[in-house]
Image (cartoon, rainbow over the protein chains, first blue to last red):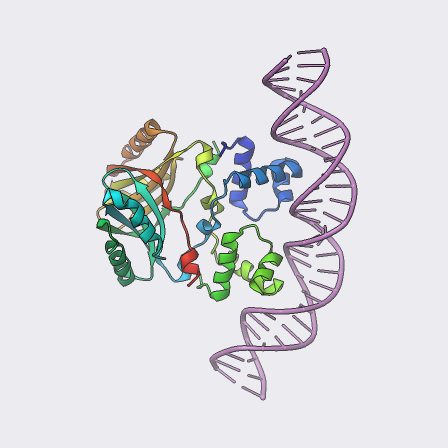
Amino acid sequence: MTAYDSVDRALLLALGSDPRATVVALADGLGLSRNTVQARMARLEASGAFLSFERSIDPAPLGFPLEAFISVHVRQRELGEVVEALRGIPEVIQAHGLSGSVDLLVRVVCRDAHDLFRIDGEILAVDGVERTETSLAMGELIPFRLGPLLER
Amino acid sequence: MTAYDSVDRALLLALGSDPRATVVALADGLGLSRNTVQARMARLEASGAFLSFERSIDPAPLGFPLEAFISVHVRQRELGEVVEALRGIPEVIQAHGLSGSVDLLVRVVCRDAHDLFRIDGEILAVDGVERTETSLAMGELIPFRLGPLLER
DNA sequence: GAACCGGTTGAGCATGTTGCTCAATCACGA
DNA sequence: TCGTGATTGAGCAACATGCTCAACCGGTTC
C-alpha cells in the first residue's frame, strides 16, 4: 500500500465532508479533471485505502446503546484461539492486540448493563482467558477523525 | 434516532459488502423497488445512521503506520478542558470517556516509537492530566464489524 | 538532445443512474 | 370501514459513469 500524495489527501478530505459526492462534483471542487479523479479513486480503492464501510454505521439504532472496552489478559500461547473464540461473539465489534500488561483490547456493544455482564462472562469462559477488566464507554468524546492529519 | 427494522438491516448489510453499490443494484439484490431503497437510504442518512466517512479511511498510508492506545487519568473537574486540549493534537484520532479507574481512552497514530513518545509527552503536558499509560497496538485482530449483529 | 514514462487533461459516446413525480396498492391499527 | 404510512411500478429529464482516444507535461534515462 503506497502512501497518499497531496492529491489523494485532498480527495479523501473532500470525501470526508461529502461521502456521496459524485466524481464530477469532486473533480469540480478540487479543480481536477474528471478523468484524474476517477483514476485516483480507482487506485485508492485498489490499494485498500477504503476500509470496510461498516465502520461508518452507527451501531446504536441496532438496539445496542451501550458500548464498553474490555481489557483481556490471555495466556500468550493461546492468543490465536482466544481471538477465534471472540470472533464468535457477535457483540464483539473490534479487538486490538496490545503490547504492555494488557493483551487484548476488546470493544463490545450491548443492550444494557445486564447484557454487558453476560458478554463479559462469555469472554471469561473462553479457554486461555485469564482475567478481564471492563470499562463502560461514557461517550465518544473525540469522534474518530483524520481531518487534522489530512490537512497537513 | 429510531431503530433499524429488518429492511434497514438488510440494506446496511448489502452496503457493507459493496459500499459503492448503486440504488438500482441494491434494490435488485434485495428484491425491493428502487423507490423503496431510495426512501430508506434518505431516511437512514437523515437520521444520522451514517457516521463520518473518515472512519473508513486507512490512516497508515498517511505516513502513520503505528497506532497506540493511551489511558489517561484526569482530574475529573478538568475533563472538559483536557478533551479540548487533546482535540488540538492531530495525532489523536479518537477518544472515549470511560467509567472505572481510567478516565479517557485515547487512540493515537504515530510515525514511529519516538513520535509516540513525543505525543505521549504532549498529552502529559496538558493541564489536568495526572498520568498516562501507553499500549502499542499490535494489530487489529478483529477488524471493526457489525455484520454478525446485522444478520440476527 | 531524444526517447521514454507516468500522470493529467479534455473530448466524446453509449449506457446506466439519479431525483423527482404520480397513481395504485398493500398491511396495519384505530 | 376508514385512514395512515410504506411500497410499488411507471415515466421522464438531467446527469453520471465507464470507457476509449489523442494530446500534453514534467521527470528520468540513455
